[in-house]
Amino acid sequence: MYCHWALHVDLDIPKTTREFLEQVDAFVASVLAGSTDIAAENRAINHFVLLDTFKGQFREFLNAFGLPSVLCDEEARWHEFVEHYSGVIEDGSLACNGVNLNLVDKVVFSKGQRRRAETYVPFDLVWEIFLLDKRRIIVEGNASPLPNGEPMRGWTVRLVS
Figure 1 (tube, rainbow, N blue to C red):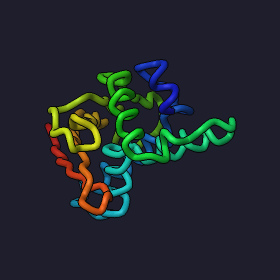
Figure 2 (cartoon, rainbow, N blue to C red):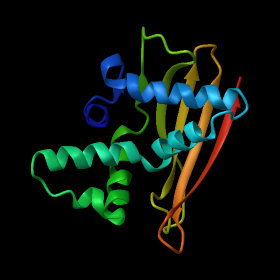
Figure 3 (spheres, one colour):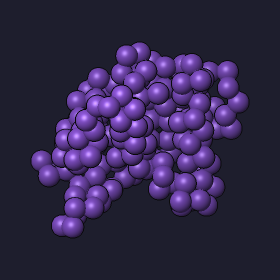
Figure 4 (cartoon, rainbow, N blue to C red):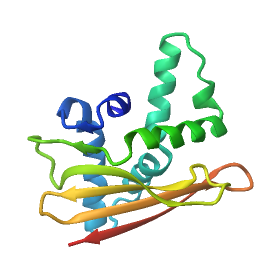
């Protein structure tokens, strides 16, 4: 999906977007129910803020073709890559038309406010989730390194009528 997204800014083919949007749908269900599945929410936040799934899939792709995976193995290089990748897909949308999701119609990615230099990406990652009932959920997130090198994620989730 991530490779397709970089080439085709607006995606609407269920085969490409379905798995990702199903995870977003589970995140939305938990949020709307009062955070009933914190584990699913944390997995989704890792997608939203750190793009963990993308990193793993990209590493597998590089390894499958015998290419160096240093981009995925070194955090500083990964975060620089995410910054540039985000500029490519900025304001594109992920849509899953005609597929029976419970709550989500589409997701739109954009850059948010700028952050300090020590954050992994120098801006917030913003995911605007359009719901089938015409409401929206806006997730804004960022991540900074803790002294031990582990990521500290920060995010807000807003429901907009």
